[in-house]
Length: 93
Image 1 (cartoon, rainbow, N blue to C red):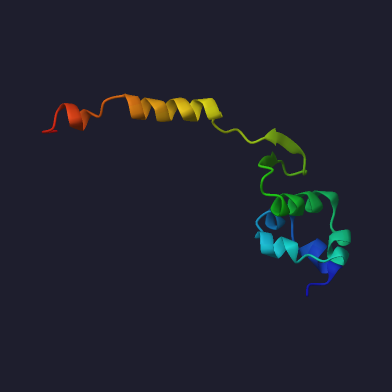
Image 2: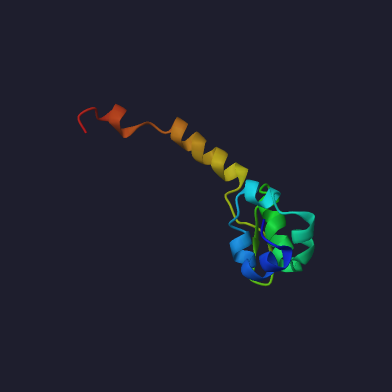
């Protein structure tokens, strides 16, 4: 219900990036056409959450967000499973 020109002025890219998926999906074609490229990028990130990419204030992608590699996670789980639990070795502690 927000007029397209008003939406483009009121919501900064950072605010748009905090929209829920449902809110982002409700943006009309007219509203979308009134947004800047940076605002459209923020909206696209709301609508495609599987693209976990950091964006700077100018809308430029900073690459993939850093996270633990799958190998690191698997090795961590294996360590938990294979190392003896201190409570089992010394029941009184």
